[in-house]
Image (cartoon, rainbow, N blue to C red; front, top):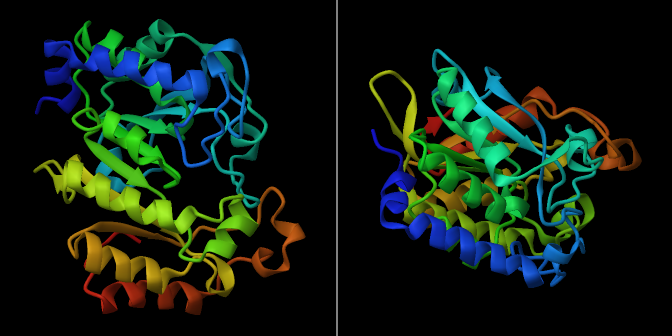
Length: 300
């Protein structure tokens, strides 16, 4: 299998996309917050990131979905900071605290090459939305040196349409969170009242680009959409509505991970409604809701 971006690299289009994406940083519109700050001059907006990406860690990861892990692990690169402000973040030291080191395109591309040499099945970009230009620069550098692993865009689901279009033909596997169906919950828990609107648009666009998840004979994902839905207590994640949208407006063949591992982290203790784990009944109800609307490819 040839990774999608290899074809774009051969025509020069990948490098052109990287240049266009970098220009967006002059008045940043990479996500729906549309801060408009000049990140190339050192200004920072909601994501608290300037001109360079910050990497917290990278390496083979065996805790992802089985279709990503395979035998040799998912080649994850964890980026610091985030375009969301989730009060229950389980990686708060990274996403809120910014733990990590700044890297340029060659260093980031070198990490991708190192993951390929270690036999990882994909390059799994964790929290990539706010560093899309830096990622494109690094992929262009690495592709020119032989990188040919599928890219996994492992994001929070709060995406800008123009930014996603820069990734058309670059990303092989989209893996967004589908966090909420209710605008007020999005505001209260992640600082984004318009989260549901942009999530729905993003899911449709991602599916348009890559289609349903295709899994090879070895059980490893090759291309397509994989949606994560973290079940929150008290029905706050809106599983019924999220799954109805996926089945009705995207595809009943959507691969969905109904995730039951929520636990109160970061500032969750300040919000009584999420200061506990979901019950077994709540988890079962979410999975039943997915099946009820015809979603059948469940990884839970």
